[in-house]
Length: 485
Image (cartoon, helix red, strand yellow):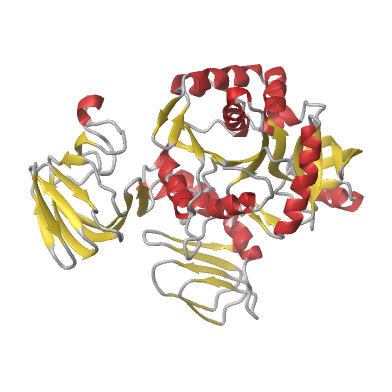
């Protein structure tokens, strides 16, 4: 195995077809699937189990940075996190990683992995990576092709060409989401694979091919990398240059044109979990072919997917239906109509409904907060502050806050005076008071915050100081928008 192998984790997907669990600000790769498990975390673990893999490079959206950083921190994994100001598809994202891995004269092999897939049989994956690394070292851009198990019309396909050695093949052609009859024919032929979106290549090889076939993307990414800034654990490419970059996938921008494209067969169970139907197909079915997750009670139910997150879900007499319950929304649909969820999300967006974008649980560099109740003139949140972490020093023009400590110790600064509060104690922050919350202890601080006032919008924050290098109101020149983070 090559020792200079670096995992590159792509986190750009939004997962709108998995609404209401996945949201624009809480995409599927970071969703807690139970016991703290996430698809992003699974991907990081899978990569680091490959012999010779070094610390990963993670590419994610600016708005999702705390989810990625928090997941890595829980795993005690050091990583370089590159932040896209806006998504520009996979070709530019991989280019940023390649530029990072060519710094200082280095030229690593890049194992590029989407962060929102399920892949089983780790040993087979590791073997295929080792074989692909041999081809990548020879100058090929290797994509991993999944051996198809059926005539799937929702995936792209790759046709293998001549053998290249090490078990790999040249790419004869790519086929995008075929019709059923074409998928049947490709399955019968035996020389087509599902396009997994995973790649292995040398960083310099990718940049050279991108410069040749996608010069505008290459130039924009190179300019953005030159203008990058480092902020704590994050690297921010130049915003203006990156936003000028064309949006394109690596398949369209490079792979379909390059003579260095190769495919390495990978015979494992794989799913991109692109819909609730995929969750049903990959889930553990009972004797009536139901897949149940959470607190679910069923009577006379068959072939259903039932997912409860916050309360008891009782179903009677249902057949071939999916029900997904979250704290603030419930989805009910026939299983054969689940691909239409994106239409619901589009309507929510058009109507400016917060349910398409925001999730009740939000991560921040200091911990997290979860909205429990939102009503007229008041709302209730559960706040968790990590040991040693603190929120920004701030004030509010329109709302007051009551804090009740559930567990841990809170150091509260209010108008310059510091006090400690422990379990079952509370404090009041009036309108206009400068305040800061800190956890001086060694266990997480959990408290309940009750906000009250005529206006409870998250843009009612004046930030005076921040421990994480984020802009204060004085630096920004206006009210700081966002949670008191």
